[in-house]
Image (cartoon, rainbow, N blue to C red; front, side, top):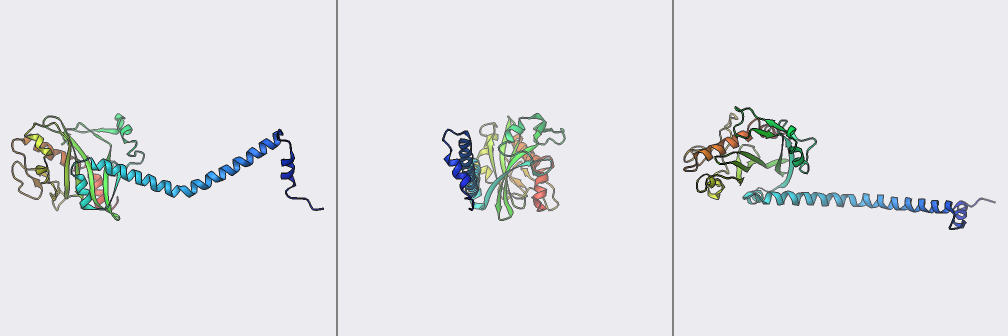
Length: 264
């Protein structure tokens, strides 16, 4: 008589419920079924989860940039998809081990800061972080706009701003001052929309690649200048030095060069 292929299973089920063998076998089968169900659900839900994470990240980035005065309108006019990346400033590449989520912790380590020689410290910072988070607006594969956080010493204290550059990496799209403590009515005018309106379209480099950007002492006299602020010569000079530092070799220069070469 042919053996019943189900007989081992039937014999197992026929065992008393108090049987240790039966308990362990049933527990194993139930666990295996649950594991298969969980694995299947994970595979099926992974695309949805990835899409949700991407949407959440995009919303977080947009919320952060929306808080920068004047940048929302600039981004809306430019179009494209906004993304963010932490840059290794010395290499001009995306940081290998630092993300936007871990950037603050990384910069809490003094080892991730570089001391600046007096001759190179145009912005009066003393030291420069090794990593910085930038924001990119892409139109397909091309970068149409990049937002660069910059900082420097002003007349009365630290000035912080976000500089937007167009896709050629030398035409200013806009500037937003996010922190300053300059003299009210004088240097503090760097936050005024009327003065900031002079930045879009200003060129930072000449055809030879030399940094030429400057805040003029009076009215702008070239495409490389913006109007100066009357009575605030030191603040105007501080903005000039700050922008030049961050666009130079110790700031975002290596990154901008890599973008121009199509390597980023």
